[in-house]
Image (cartoon, rainbow, N blue to C red; front, side, top):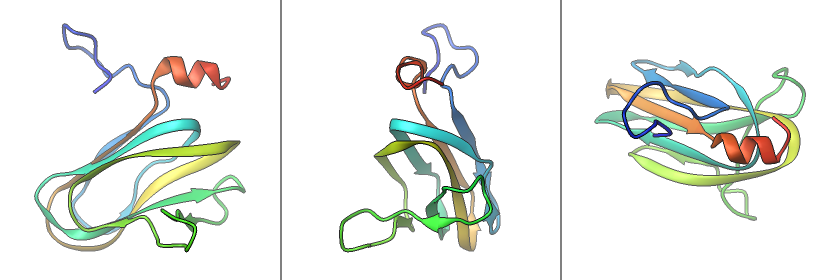
Length: 118
């Protein structure tokens, strides 16, 4: 997960990681270009991918296709997302929670981030 071969700290940047044990939102970070979104663990709940164009004042559910199907997940998943516009913030939002621990990681490699000016 973005760690050097010998272990150590995660070197991905930007990076959002943590877990949900109830409803709520993750921390936020700007992403540009391709980035990874992983939701994992044994859980019962729903997690949405959201983004903001206005520095977090308003949040929109991300769509997974042209017909607007929301990026809402109820089981473990790992997807690659693409953001073409700079300074767009992303977060995960746990909208329903039943049980377990919902772990997550949203990341971009340092080389990709540098290519886009982060």
